[in-house]
Length: 503
Image 1 (cartoon, rainbow, N blue to C red):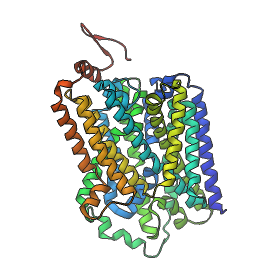
Image 2 (cartoon, one colour; image 1 turned 30 degrees about the vertical axis):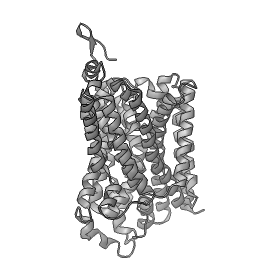
Image 3 (tube, rainbow, N blue to C red; image 1 turned 60 degrees about the vertical axis):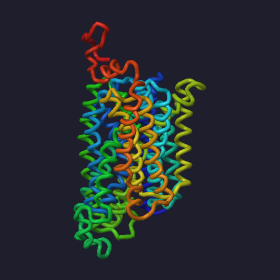
Image 4 (cartoon, rainbow, N blue to C red; image 1 turned 135 degrees about the vertical axis):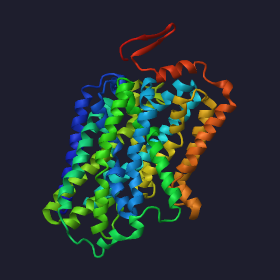
């Protein structure tokens, strides 16, 4: 094994051991069912913002964004912009009302708002679907990273991430994972920032002719490729609206004490993500300048030290980047497994096992099952795979949340029809792309980025279905809407409003 491989393996093992150690500390604090599901709703805004940022900055953010900038140029900048701007919409329209619903999961919210077991069932299935779609690129990215660094089979890296995640999630639940993810945000930020100081100070020639690619018109100017206008706006819609529909993001707002702290948490997340997303585009430009055209875009970040520095310094910087990449895989995978376990533990296993036992069994099933799908499925770029998960989320939970929070006319039948329509169309596109069955031309562009079609369809079906079934609105919808939009310092009584302490 080369010196680079040895150094990288040491760094990866250190991150894994550190993750388990921090999770073990959190385990000491996990005592109740509420600890496992929502950390007893006692997480402060600063810690929660770091934890949300930690789990949100996935393989696509750490590796994929730089690779996309390297290959696609300015068009790829919409990825980090969209992934960040999604939290602005979440802040304005969803964060505080979602917390005031006092639910554990998105299916809990669906049942609370609509009073419908059918809506809860559809929402539960979608949580698992989106969680699996988002988890696959995390496992695939881990396998790719370890294969690049050591030559190990891809299942080794994917299996290692699955094992560490299970040790933390099944042992301590949300309480344990919150501490891990908060630490890993700062680790990922440092892992990109520290090597950049050294890489920017070097001016090696890189691969023959690579520097000339910086001046190519199609790379410097936006929307040069076929169907670029459609693809750009579809990407914007998926990333802007998909964030609020990601189950592992939404569940974190239930850990805040009240709606006000949920909003403060979201503002802090915007700042943290903005700081992080300044870095991957710089790596993308460096990759365009020095790496050969044959480089795997997802490996660009890891390859840069070798091309720009070489020697022992390159080994150290590669190890730092590998540590950050594995922190990304671990933190995002933990949040996804947690969201899957929360839903499956409650809705499938809850009647057969005690709550904590159901949660742990569901975590094992979710992680192991997704690992098997990852190893059997074909390859997709990690950023594109994540983008497809965003498209499904934007086409299902985004309409449910926006209409459920802001429109009292939403009915159970309309909500179910909208989620099924948007989810079926978006999932069909995802399956076609993963199987390599997408045709060329306009149809292929729509399938590769379906949000611009599927999101309007989901909203239209949800609104139309609700108007056709307006007589089946939940009986207590007025009271529900007041609860969602009334600050916690005000309590609704039969006789009116009265001041009280925050819940």
